[in-house]
Length: 316
Image (cartoon, rainbow, N blue to C red; front, side, top):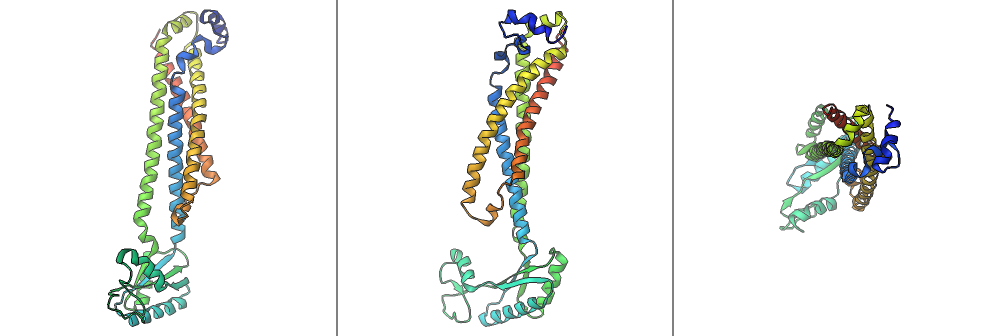
């Protein structure tokens, strides 16, 4: 018996419109599934957006700090510190692998440490002879090398500068943010894990809904079996019903998630912090986010089909 013929036989009995889904009334299939899928998709899209923003932030920070070094002149005496700083600047200017070198001004150093040490607690330049300025701050030189910064290049540069400035200490700027990069990577894995867990929860909800619908319509399904209906024909009816519910829920959840992500993006952009603004989502990221609801619909549809087909094999 054809799939098109079966609904015609049962349309009058079920009071339906005569289409395929009338064999099993829609009210018995849907239930809370569209709302569950909407919530799950919204959470998955938000988690995916967070993971993509963290990835962009890490890439922007790594690109900005690539090849960057900081030379500290650790010397308590202000005159000797200034002499070594000038010697280091001259040595860096003669090195072809150094593209830029600049001494950080004393005013900038004071602004950096005053929140921690208090105003007037920093020993400044040569003209600062007050007893209150008891904490000497190292002179800082911001420089950038051409090409990637390797441990070997960093060690060679350290040896070259020590010859003219014994108090020079060379640090790669990227090493300062290594814990930050590690935390960003951990949060990205957490976002991925959250997406996987939500996907499993979505599949479990669809599985339970399909099993409940099968139990509620067991008598009707057995009659269809007796009249020659196949498991594949019945499974397609449940599959299409779940697919419609999943599409509706995915659209609602995606719309809500996009609004939340856009509002959060505007809030973080208003901070105007360099490491935060680097996490802005591009059009490629928004395209990736659109894959999430599509994958959720496919997951729900396939789960419903596999569940129904597996349950129908044990009925008759």
